[in-house]
Image (cartoon, rainbow, N blue to C red; front, side):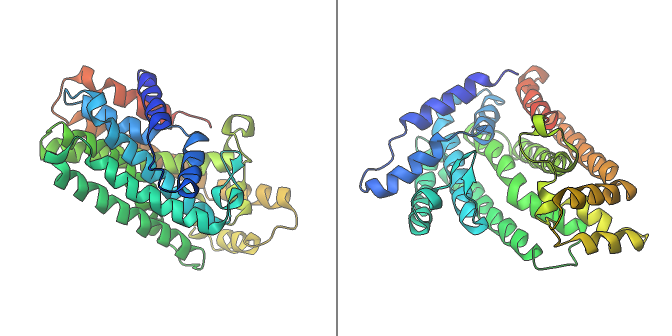
Length: 322
């Protein structure tokens, strides 16, 4: 890897970011959530996207923070909707304080992300704002789709891919594009870079689906089969649920909603996934998006050596086991 120094830069900037102190009760939950960790991949992408076009990373550090603050805002509100007790092994904000505090401090993070987006980039603010705002809306649409899917039995694979594109992947593409906009990259190169990030995000999420079912629990860092026990409609599940052999979807749906014996449910579901070749199909789809991402990176009109950090970061995300 050759982006560790960017992670350190982001961590330092977050720790020294002066959250407005008009209200201690607003600022404390924000500071708490930002302090409990995270890979900081999204802000690093903004820095790398800027450097790709000869820009200096420090000149877009505020924009990188805007992406990370926005991302954490979505996590704070997601935790409320999911009634999640823990985030990265620590109490979620609504558990540590209360739901009202989490809603309001989350709103505050969203507002502050726009303030960070503007800083030192007034000449490019309209372009930055359009990219950021469109992405913010798309993330909300993706979250709504995810919630809608919980109540539906007819979710298609294409709908699922669109949901994860909106909920997860578009923010990676936007993070890169913000850096490119500030570096005065051409519209064509900006679009290739955005699609590189988006397709890496899609590949990442599909691999995450696979690892949740088939990963090594010691390396994956969480319970394998968690999505199965939660009855999540992942790519694996939907491929199996739509299999041409009608006996396979029937058996899968019979397991849906049953949690009397967790081990038996996971084992039986994995057997059906493998029988339907959902594991192979999911990995192949993930690899196809990864190949597409690299094709977009290859098409950007900058020297090859400038692209190595992004190649390394993409490989780091996709070759991980946790």
